[in-house]
Image (cartoon, rainbow, N blue to C red; front, side):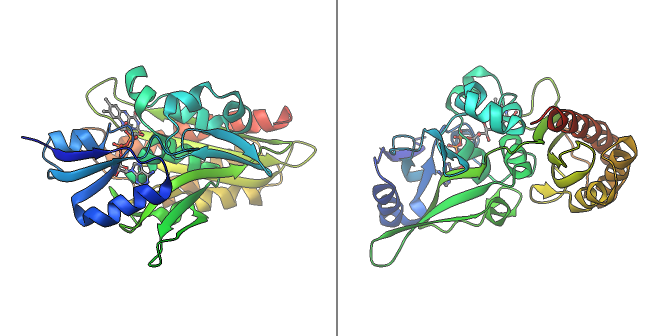
Length: 300
Ligand SMILES: Cc1cc2nc3c(=O)[nH]c(=O)nc-3n(C[C@H](O)[C@H](O)[C@H](O)COP(=O)(O)OP(=O)(O)OC[C@H]3O[C@@H](n4cnc5c(N)ncnc54)[C@H](O)[C@@H]3O)c2cc1C
């Protein structure tokens, strides 16, 4: 069966959004295709009249530093992120999360935009980005034909498992997060079955900022997935770290207990039981918090 009739490669955001408008619900955006094309081949997504490939749009494949932000185009691949010295220096959590997606073949084509837009609560790149308190640039084709782009919090993109909040006249253009400050560092870790499924049993990312003495956490961001219907920010665990006088083992254990209490963990048939995930929240969160704290003490 033919899965699509036309494959478009627009060079601008305007042209991509105009194509989406022209075809209505008979078109979908494609980037690396590692989620969408498989879904189509497996019959989870019906055949379409058109695919709109966004990987040729100018700037979509670029990583840059700009006005205090690291900006990553929506069509940047996981392999690009893995190799980027800029990303590694400012956001170890993202470099580490993207470097474990699939295998090299997948990472060479799969994009950060596709990972986020697919909206799965355990998507690795998404969990890395969330701990960096990233924003997403959403471009909209207005009724008068103009394209308007605005930054919004990453979390505002998620409606439920596999469902994002983007309308049919919208697309993701880029992501950004602040450059890493002194006494700040981030880390990511996950547990994955060796083969057979494309998503981890559990992934955890954290970013910590310590005071100048390297003792007390003054900012904390923790992301865990899957721990609910959308990618999860562990606010109670962050609050436990910030309430402690020192970012030591006791503070980390308080954060672990808070995360275990707040996370909505469930049993999934092919991946893990709820009880196992509960234990793994503790294992992974301890690891990433210790690594982030050590990195922040070294200066960030
Ligand atoms: C063998 C295998 C292993 C995998 N392993 C992992 C893993 O370990 N961890 C993990 O997180 N994922 C994994 N995945 C899933 C997948 O590779 C990632 O989610 C990837 O980042 C998707 O990116 P893509 O560019 O291929 O997306 P596509 O398949 O091209 O698109 C995915 C969705 O995003 C939409 N989309 C894409 N770009 C945009 C945009 N700019 N604006 C709006 N919507 C957009 C598409 O319309 C589609 O709905 C695996 C997949 C395979 C096949």
